[in-house]
Length: 224
Image (cartoon, rainbow, N blue to C red; front, top):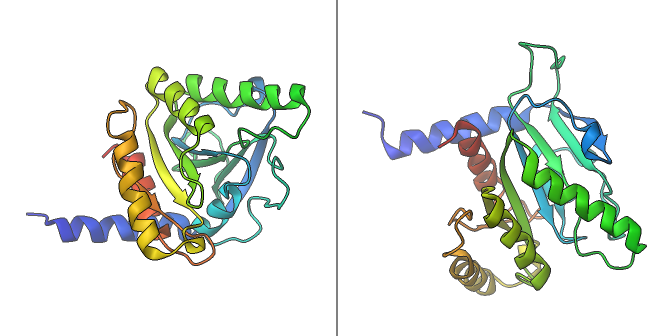
């Protein structure tokens, strides 16, 4: 009989093996027609501009320069695909999973046409990608869920796309405030049909919550 502790250890070991491998950037997708063929399962990271998506992906795989980071909001303008190194992409030799860094939403300082193009790409991808297993919606712990985040959650609920809330930059607020925010965020999503109920608090800078997120991603890939 397998115990809960044994399952947790297996998940940690599995996540450790996948995320300890070198990861590589394989493609930037500026429009839906440039998407890779649907193959391995994907998880995507979405959030307001400058919420820390690229930093979180780099921290997850332990590679500082994998996803490009910038202090300038709106730097990520494409769907950026990352996979473990060493796979040809041919039939029978596909990676076990792909990570997708999405353009930030809600960035109003770029030209409107550019913002509209990013927004359409993000929403079309979320609605239409069969291999997308879950979207991790990143929320800056200093600001919580804002109106633009709620609009994205509404879209995901309507499209029945599974998503989970990940708080970022939790090292910027005090631990009691983090606990309070986790509880408040959980209450805000409790009645949302496509929301996974567990809220994960992370810090890319300090490493907090990264192992928990890795294990959550692995469970998603396994369909559990």
